[in-house]
Image (cartoon, rainbow, N blue to C red; front, side):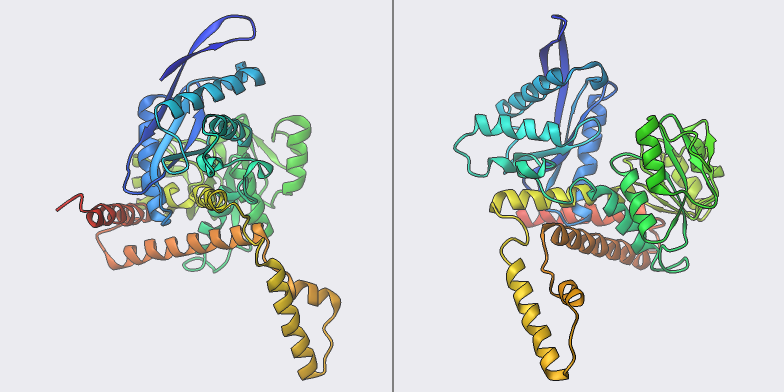
Length: 424
């Protein structure tokens, strides 16, 4: 689609935008909206295809879709971004490409909760009698129908994927592992933080303008404070500064997490990768040629199509919340706390012991929305990994986690179409 955008200086730009839908074996469809000056139709359709398989791998009942607007937001005012977002939403509504039962967008590169709130508000105005209208988009602010835990969901999902992989093979667990993360934004910061909290040693971090490395480990909060104060990771005290972001990929480490842009590990640098595990936090960070080189070197690659599915999983939870009009944990939290309290009182009476107030509060605490969301995300990532690993072990002709994940996804989509009677 194309539509005009009046700039603050009075000039008019013609904006190109897309929404691609790949598979309707499950409805609604799901996929983010990215704002980027480099985006094109081929990229959007490819990403819509990947969304179909990503949802299938983690058993989220959506088909795949993707949206994009060809715009450099750094050249736009907030008012211009809002107007183009609302106009894009109008076009989607007019063409029947958005709705809680049809197609549910989400944030992606260049967009966030602000843009999702504008989309939801525009849709509600155009569909005022639709009771489930807020379910037309996910990734919204919590006070506009969003859900707790969505911001960090992709990073937390990457962490859960790594934790499942580290249960076997290497010394079990994440504690003590040397981790390098390329990217310190929506995904990279959170996965680095969760790894740090689990006892890993963050030995390298990178952003677009360069990287920092410290074999002894980086203090993540101090790095964040430095980045917030200076606008860059570079020249952090106690760390070596690397001039190129890609240099961090070649550091000696146990786990490498490319969580920035696509095409970072290529045939030209794959042979210099020294990590034992690569967990793809970004979409398509490893080229097919590089994937073959890493496999030949015995490096385990955890594919993006599984590893970064945390965002769509928690978006699914947000969509369910919007349809049910009640937050997770709101109905049962007090009952759980009361039941746990009675149980502890029974234990005290039977044993003659007294449980301290702090211990009592820790035990009887009911599940709030964030607790339920994180628990559901953990369960889904663990089950999906077990299915991928089972396929990998059962079928010797399948040589990688990526291939096993794709086999599982394609089989699930095919079974869905067969059940509907689409194929004989």
